[in-house]
Image (cartoon, rainbow, N blue to C red; front, side, top):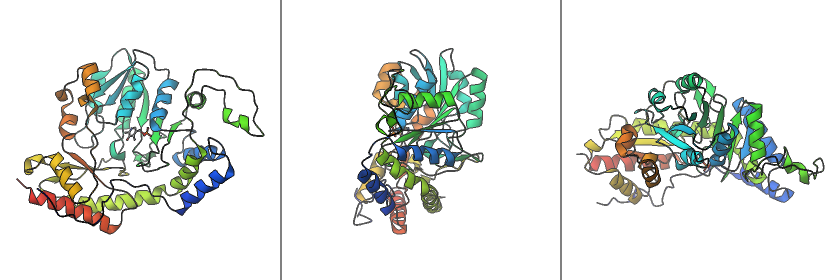
Length: 391
Ligand SMILES: *Cc1c(COP(=O)(O)O)cnc(C)c1O
């Protein structure tokens, strides 16, 4: 079961869209002598908040840190519960465990793979404090329904928007809708600084708390203590964390922010090519489009109709690799990983839709640096493999 390579060189699953502008911006910061949190980070926060139309943006060194600080800011305690969907990355639930609190999973909608709001109320207990909707692939979860439940039970909503930049939900940008929102600037994300993240909120108190806790719990603007305008005096008001973002990353982030829409437009064009190429194929199911959300295609999650194929997902992935096409899987649902099975006794069938869909998803490469011939190579490889193994 082998396939001649479609192309000479391996097409990576993801590549950041870096050009001379990012290189110049980073060079300038490095040459300036100010490497860590400073003026570039302040500027990045300002422009990021302005772009989203939100009052505060707090830069941190990952989305994991962003979600940790957001939960800290709302006062999550040991024994509390936080509802999220099982169809997500490790970070979304592990940050809840940092507090010795419990991540409570619910299943996803069959079409969007986002949290199913109709299942949330049944998961609420007297210990529930927050809901973390994950905007899978970048398409927004049903935020209106989620906020209605949150209002009814006095819960906070913290979006895991690691994929959702930029995403319009009913005309409003994700990041300016929920109580707090966390973004990722990890190397593969739609705005990439290598490592990095952002918390956005309209709430002054939460923003202040996140700013203090990201740098050792030191009083506000502690980074300024090494500048002319700063003071050597500082006060530690809480045992904080070391989650601040470097100016090197922020300089890249500013350039990436200015390219956000052009990178988005290119990914959407690639998605339309994929959609057209796979539509109607008996073994291939292109991603569903929610009527309420734009789709920024951080991921293009293709689903396989396994009944129409003689091979399974792992074999499909292996054939893509042999064709020199990088692909990935998002995700094996959290409740099927050994830590969550051992800690909470979850069984695969507890969340049947995530369990079933998680077995047949393949994420195809989709990023602005792909050439038209790269896109064609992906189409050819996927269609070839599917055609040759039709049941
Ligand atoms: C990438 C990702 C994260 C974590 O982002 P980091 O910046 O690497 O911490 C969290 N949630 C989801 C859904 C992600 O894809």
